[in-house]
Amino acid sequence: MAFPEDVLTEEEEIVLHLHPHWRAAVAPGLLLVLALTGLIMGWVLLPDDEGGRVGLALIAAILLWYSLRYAVHPLLVWRCTHYVLTSERILLQHGILTRERRDLPLNRVNDHALTQSLPDRLLGCGTLVVDSIGEQTARLVSVPHAQLVQTTLYELIEAAPEDEDEEEEASVRP
Image 1 (cartoon, helix red, strand yellow):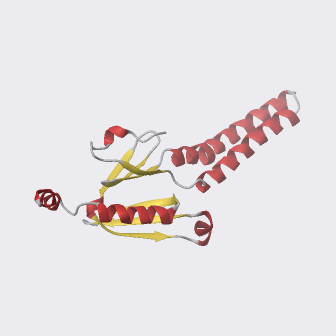
Image 2 (cartoon, helix red, strand yellow):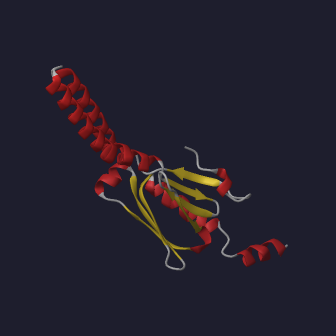
Image 3 (cartoon, helix red, strand yellow):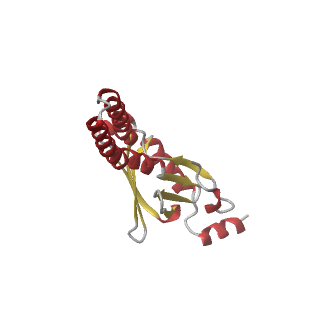
């Protein structure tokens, strides 16, 4: 799913568009495969008499509930979470039915920190915490290519003008 271009300004360009790391989808994906396997095995192995049909319906209902709650929902959350770095701001968007979008202008960023556990380091992901003026904090959890994202964020912050007045002064100077 592409990020909607209509939320960007005219001069703004997307530098990075990321979803959380694929490892967030592994456990729900395996659970979904196990649920489908259990349903197929129940259909094949249970007898065709009345008790078998009731047992299969009960197994199917239980597997459907658990697969929706613990497999399909986390996969949808993973797919509907966007981390977008543009030339002017950081956009965070998440939500399946109702969306929440958060903008953090680059010229307001005070600090950014990367945290990686050992499995995160092996997979190349991490949690990036971005602090800004006004005590706003953006937390990008399980960011793929975390070190590259942090470096890119640093470069964007350094390239972003501090203030609109300074940008106007720079354009007036010969």
